Length: 387
Image (tube, rainbow, N blue to C red; front, top):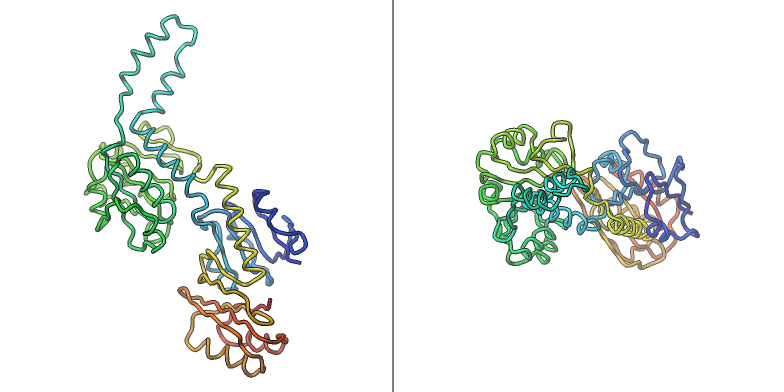
């Protein structure tokens, strides 16, 4: 039996995919084999020795101590794309709210007296203040063409917009899904200079912190609308303040309210609603639970953020799963130790990702403790388990 600890409420449809003949759910477990989490902060949590995996029912993993877990050979999963449709719809809603002045129009109607005999005349008279514009023919710049960015770009094209995309690390899968009508910007400055709207869809890391800065403001098309449903910090606070004050930025639409933005007349802030739909929560839970099961039961790695993805059909008597630091001659040492134990390898696959590597080794005979101890004794080995 494997014990799975839940740090947040997880969709029942996701949890139901963990058969009770194999898994025990325990929100208070002190030493779980796996952890399911959404937004709970894990940075102060100790890593127990038998922890195999952490599965985040969502895309972002800022709340998870990935470096520390990696050093213990713990695989961290997320659910890229499971909430993409929810975020896409919110981005489009934000653009529509901005060009049609919907928040201000609603505020105007809300303060009218429903019993006023002149209500109809006041409604008609007031609408002049909220004349907007249409999205068709305007240019949207999309920074980050992952699961969400591709969907935003494609739906914007269907609304008649010109779309500029920028992503130097775009995957082949993303390229297949992206509309061929989306133009590719050669640089961020090119995208900023041509876009009426800019939507950010990148993770927050040292390379993307302050991605829109004062230097960006200097080249940006005047009267720009910025949409940030990715992460707080991607738009630099000083650049935003200057742009809103000068009119260079006419709207900032964000899922990350801050003290200096709340109540600002040019800012639309939402309480981190990006993935807050019933469908997205269920999709995320189902995806990460399935990934967790595949790893726990078969050693396969799907949508990991710290180890290479690897999926291998089982062949042989037992499977050895090995996580290690990405150092020279690791494969040679592993095969030597296995060969010394007189166990035949039926198939083996190794892959690396940055500082870490992962191995699946199927063997034709039962694995003894002496072999496992020998593998663990190799310098750089992070974890070894037999399935």
